Image 1 (tube, rainbow, N blue to C red):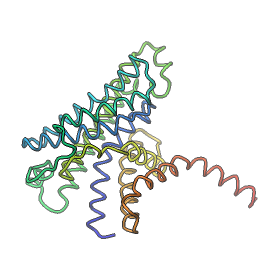
Image 2 (cartoon, rainbow, N blue to C red; image 1 turned 90 degrees about the vertical axis):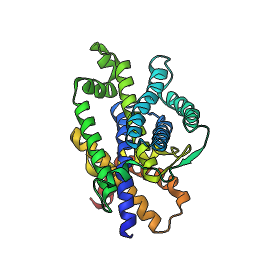
Image 3 (cartoon, one colour; image 1 turned 120 degrees about the horizontal axis):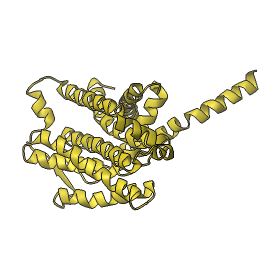
Image 4 (cartoon, rainbow, N blue to C red; image 1 turned 30 degrees about the horizontal axis):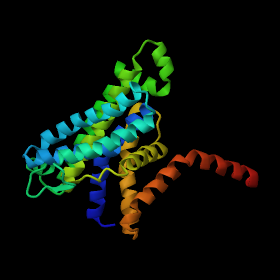
Length: 295
């Protein structure tokens, strides 16, 4: 694999790590299967591109996070107030966001950024060179990771983590679990939308269908990170998610380099997630067979 492809995969892995942190917050911390991710990712990308067209790329990132938080409140409301199952609430929110994303894009299915500045081009004015994109992505991911770690160590963060572990116990303590779910899903989708905004400016275009499969990519990053790098402490888990995202992109890059058709990308992603999730079972069966045949 040539150096340029390696660098591009590394940059994408770091940018997608922001989305993986959002998926970690909903799937692992809150223990809720939130499929809103596929829609909120595009929401962030659409807002980011629209703001770039108005020559406000950095404001586009901020607004993407804010609108992503609002998008995350939709499944939270459906689940907590209307008592709709979490999985179905995410699906309904994802469907609603598809139409809302088209409205943000003024009815156009895709928009390209032609001769418009992005956060990456603006950062190149400060730090020039071939690695300016990588440096900016690393700085932003490090900032998000630090803020998320600090947030999860606050009183609200502890309640949020406890809600995912045992919501009945948390309610018995007098904590409003509906509020913690609202906060958790809002922050999760805010991070996802921020990642979408970064990807749109990185690739200089947005497409209304670019969010398809983002849940799988996010889960793959989270699970690979947990299996390979461990989950002993909160900071280690967060770092594992980031490194898992990078490792996932590198695996995909190697597969493409070896001749895998790009059309098989989703299939490979699904296989990677399946293998990662079944690792404990496979290890147990392997240990059993080893004892049976070699003891």
